[in-house]
Image (cartoon, rainbow, N blue to C red):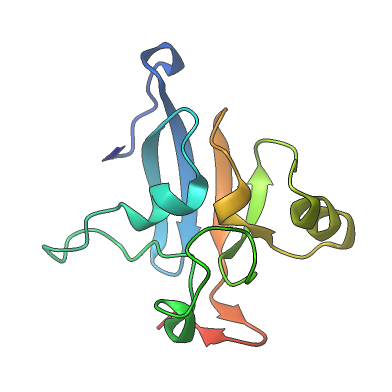
Length: 125
């Protein structure tokens, strides 16, 4: 996965994913078929130059189901992109709740928004 501001040709197998977060917006180029959760967590934050794109609140960074769609802690707003296919995401979409990033498969260009605050689990910082 790479991160930059340029669009890429989707025929390469990478799909552009725009991520709106507290510090602005980042564009990731994600392998087609990857889970959105895994793509967000894969952004290298080791050198301090990449934004924190974790879908988790600080309390759930370590306390989560590991992407199995059970805990509902990795919710994000999908502003444009694939239709929901997981039962939880269909309900979330219907009622306007965040979708589980672990159940969103990156199959087309998309725009998502990280939630700055989660009702139950608190903020991302």
